[in-house]
Each structure stands twice: as structure tokens, then as C-alpha cells.
Amino acid sequence: MVAKRKKKQVSDETIMEDDMNFSMNNDEEFDHLEDDLERSEGEMSEKELDEMEKKLRKKKKKRALIEFRTKVEEAIIGDSLLGKPKPKEHHKEISLWGVPLLPSKGHEGTDVLLQKFLKAQRYKVSDAFDMLKNTLKWRKEYKADEILEEKLGGDLQNLVGFLEGKDREGHPLWFHANAALRDREMYQRTFGTDEKCEEFLRWMVQNMERGIQRLRFEKGGVDSIVQITDLKNSPGPAMKEFRSVSKKALLLIQDHYPELVYKNIVINAPFWYYARHILRSKIISHKTKAKFIFANQSKVSKTLLKFIAPEQLPVRYGGLKRDDDDEFSPADKTSELTIKGNFAGTVEFPAPETGVTIVWDVTVAGWDVVYKEEFVPEDEGSYRIQLQNQKKMGESLRNCFYINEPGKIVITIENPTFNSKKTVYYRSKVKPTVPMYILFNK
Image (tube, rainbow, N blue to C red; front, side):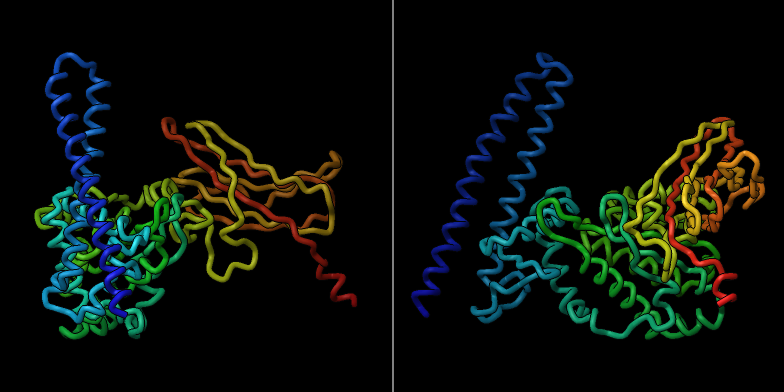
């Protein structure tokens, strides 16, 4: 047992020594780059200077990571990371979101997590180390590691907050819609006492932890989430409890979940929220502030579809994803059609076989188009069948049609705007169908 412990200690010390040697070599390269940059001022082109500065930043980040790794390694081995001594047999078991923090363990997620703390503190090692210590201390006091087992939210789950789908880059989506909280009884049940306010905050932290369960802390893995806050019919600024809890949640995420929110998209934001956000900007970091994207009611679908594929976005936000959908799944990808301003475009679904039903989905980023559907038979002697007369499109549409003669479904979309392109997303499927009159005759 003693021999095993000594062998492990030698291994840890070897890894730390390698890091220190690499750091020293890296420091020499870094100093040479700085000297070259100073000597070359005025002699190099702007492009060459940019390349030199990029190399310098890259070296600086690498040096900071090595220094941070060494600092964390020494703190864990010396039992000082959590603020008070721990038994020696436990000091190497400190982990965060399932990732061991001891660098010498060689877990590929360790550097990913450490870099998040560094990035949040602009690669200042001392500040990143303090942030990590504070986060571990807070998680212990808040019992964050056990929060997934708690029954929180009640009526709020799936009504106010829910995790659903992913963006075009694979980041999980965390939706937070506040309209239900406008109801006085619901608001009172949620924020009526200090204990209720604290429970709501814990529920928000629980949702954050659930989102993190879907991440992959590895090189090239998706390691952050997209938060979407819908403020349509949200409680106003007079609702001080809601305002207070929202502020606390924002600060908790900023202080203890560094670089885990990729984007924070706020939709249907009223004027009062913009004003409050400007005031709140004084207490949040520049990096947190830069993650916010705002979209008013007219730009909700256009903004969300820019980042999220329609098959991953719920229908209520201009996507094609429906609850308990029997026709399509997120695996059924869409096709796209771009229509210039003051032009019309058509989408066709061929129907060469009879005895089948064609089902289709259509949505338009930004709406504000005129939409028409019809069945056009192959036989010129047959009549066209109008399925949907010209109407202004303001929501995602689904329709179906039983084919009793060969032809095609033709959808015409007019873009009446002069200087704005519209992107149409659509998909279809064909399924065998037995007509109802045959079933009744049986």
C-alpha cells in the first residue's frame, strides 16, 4: 500500500515537473515573441503584426493554463482548495460536474473546465483560482451536487422552464417563459414567501445543472448551453420578488457557471426590460453582457431560426417541433428556399402515386408573407384544388392532402417587402392511406 502511494506520488510530481519545464520553455518563447514584436514595430505589414499578436495571445493563454494547472494541483495535494484540510485519501477526488480537477489524473475534461475559469477572468490565474475556490465552496454550502434529486418546480416545469432541443452547433436549449407568472395566484404560489422565492431560485439552478448533464467536457465537445428567455406577457417591473430572484440567478450563473452559457437570447422584450438591462449592466461583467441577444416580437422567429434549425425549435417560436408529434421527428430535416423582396417563390411536393396522403410543414423566418396552397393534377382536364387561399402567414403551418389522382402539391409564397429576403423552411412525407369510405363499407 505504501509502495503504491509512493509510486503515485512520484507520478504526480513527474507530471508537475513536466508542466513546469514546459512553462519555462514557453516563457522563453513568449519573451522572444514580445521582443520580436517590439523590434518589428513599423517594419512589418499590418497582416504580419496581426499574426504575431495572435501567436502572442495564444502563448499567453497556454502559459496561463499551465500556471493554473500547477496551482490547482498543489492546492488539491496540499488540501487547501476547499479551504480546510481533508483526509489524504480523499484529496484527489475533488471533481466538478463529474470531471476530476486534479490535472495529473489526465482526464481530458480537466483542462476544458480550467480554461472556462481562466477565460471568465481574462486569463488572470490568481482571479481564476479564487473563482474556482469560491465555486467549490458555494456548491458545498448550496448542496448543488444533490440538487438534481430534489423535487422542485411543481407547476413550473414545462410551463415556465424546460430543456428542449439544441441549436445548429449542438448546444442544448434552455427555455424560460414567464407568461404563466403573470397570473396572480400562480405568482403568489411561486413568490409568496421568502422560502418560495428561494425554492424558485433553486429550481432555476436545478435546470442549469440539468442542462450541464447534456454537455461533453472534452476536446471538440459541446460544453455550454443556450438560454432563451421569453418575456411575452411577463410580470412587470413592479413585481419586486420576481425581479430580485432573476437578478440573483443571473449573478449565480455569472459567478459559479463560467462560460457555460454560450448565448442568452431574450425574446419579446418590452421597453422596461431594456431599461432595466442597461441599469443591470453595471453589476454584470462585460463578458456576460456580450452574450445577450435581444429580439422584439416582430423578429423572434428570424432571430431564433438564425441559431436553431426549425426541426429543433418549438412551433410557438416559429419552428416545426411539436409535442408528441406522430408525423415528424427532429431527425426529419428541412429544405430551404430564399425569396427576394417583392418576389414570389414556389415549393412543390410531387405526388405521382395514388392512395397516399402527403403531409407537409412550412415556416418562414420573419413571417410577413402571403401564402397559398393548391393541388395541381397531371391530367390537364382535371380541376385544380385550392387547399389554402391566399392568406398572410403569421405562424408555422402543417397540412395534408389525400392523393386520388397523380399530380403535385404547389405552395406559392409571396414576399411583399422590398428590401428584405425571406427564408422558407419546409419538409414533407408520404404515407399510405386507406380512404374512410372503404373502411365504412367494410
